[in-house]
Amino acid sequence: MDGLIAYFQNCLEIVSNLITSLGVVTVALNIRKFRNDVDAHRKQDEQILIQNSINVLRKFAEQIIPEAKRKQKQFEKLLEIKKCQLVKEKDLTINDLDENEAIQEMIEQLKWDLKDRCGFNNIFNEFEQVTVYMNYNMVKQDLVYVPLHKFLINFIENNMDYFCRIRTSE
Image 1 (cartoon, helix red, strand yellow):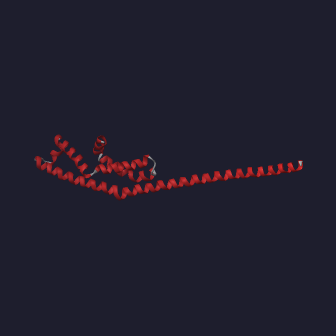
Image 2: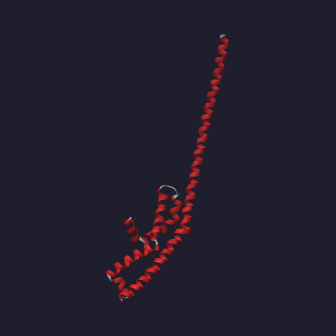
Image 3: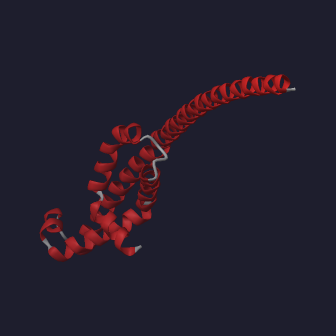
C-alpha cells in the first residue's frame, strides 16, 4: 500500500509540475497577446487621429478657407461702397477719411458692422472647433498645424480688432 501511495504521490507531483509549466506558458502567451492587443489599439487610435486630421484639413480646404476668402472680398467691396457713400454724404475727400478722427471712429464701427454682416464670427467659430480638436488630442497636431497655421495667423492678424471685440462680447 505504501508503494501505491508513493506511486500516486509521484504521479500527482508530475501532474503538478506539468500544470505549473502549462500555467507559466499560458501566462506568457496571455502577456504576449495583451501586448499585441495594446499595439493594435495604438495603431487603431493613430489611424483615427490621422483620419480626423484629414477630415479637418478637408473641411478647411473645401469650406472654411474659400468661405473666409469670399467673406473677406465681400467685406472689402462693401467697405469701399460705404466709404464712397460716406464721402458723398459728408462732402469729404478721400484724404479726409484718413485725417479726421471722428470719421475714423465711424469707419471702425462701420468695419465691425460689415464684418458682422459678412459673417466673420462664423469663421472664428470654425477656428474654435479646430482648437478644441487640437486641445483634446483628437487630431494629430503636426498634420493639422503645419498646413493651416499661416492661414489662421494671417486671418486673425487681419481681423484682430474684430476678434477682440467678439471675444469680449461673449
